[in-house]
Amino acid sequence: MALRQIRRSGDSVLRVQAEPVSRFNSGLHQLLDDMNETMIAADGAGLAAPQIGISKRVIVARDEEDTLIELINPVLSSVQGSIVEIEGCLSCPGIFGEVDRAEYIEVTGLDRDGKEVRYELEGYLARVVQHEIDHLDGVLFLDKATTLLTPEELELLRGGD
Ligand code: CO
Image (cartoon, rainbow, N blue to C red; front, top):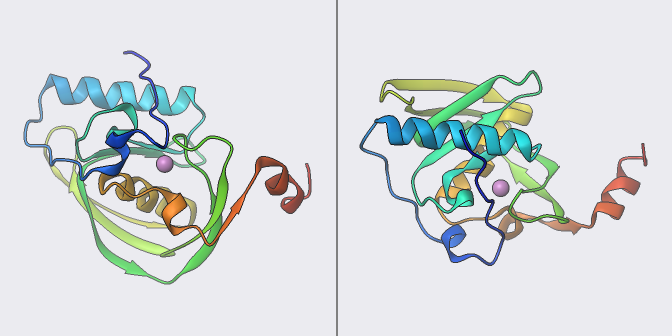
């Protein structure tokens, strides 16, 4: 496994439509392993392949219990509700923002072996997966944020603990 460099906002790879994956081979497994390692090392909740410069429809995410989710060619098959929460992005260090997202989602896609998978998610993990799928379409949370916050403003809002 290897840590990959995370691309920052301004890099054009973050602004293009990523290509679907059709080969479920060792190259894909290596990519997923590297994405998981890079996400965890950067203390992120999710990562999309374009963020490490690979324009493919691959995302990883983890919940508070460190359960890993890997999704290839993910599609939001159903969304419900709406909730505004603060989020950030490993590609946009030092900026946070309030983003309105669906509260409940159903997402379908393929696992690393090309087998169909489906997840029903809510709350934090539902938000992370929506954020990562946006990356596959060249969309950053900055595009959707209603309010942007500096780390200092975020700390004040959260009570400075
Ligand atoms: Co992001």
